[in-house]
Image 1 (spheres, rainbow, N blue to C red):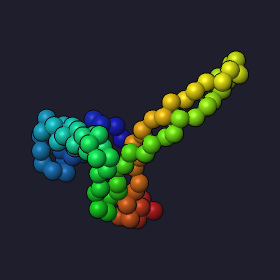
Image 2: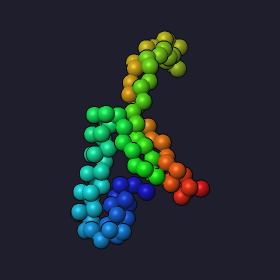
Image 3: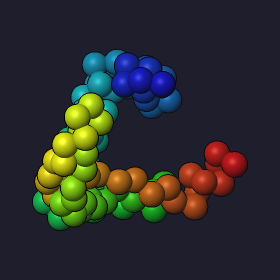
Image 4: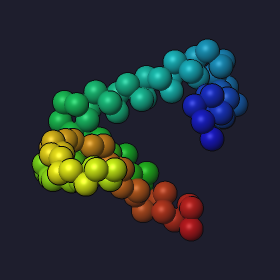
Length: 90
């Protein structure tokens, strides 16, 4: 399922127009992004939790030349499924 499929599904389940459903989906994505930028966490009880994890700087190798390269520290989004979602999928 991609974003446009999600918009169609939200529209059919909620009775919203596709335009309104698209705005709702975009709003949810924007809210999650803003929450992760601001405090690094967003929880949906029964569904799951979005968090930000920090990766430490490390040293790697260029596979072509074997030359050592420095990989900078970074922050990545992470999703942990909640009990309700795990049970629904199982």
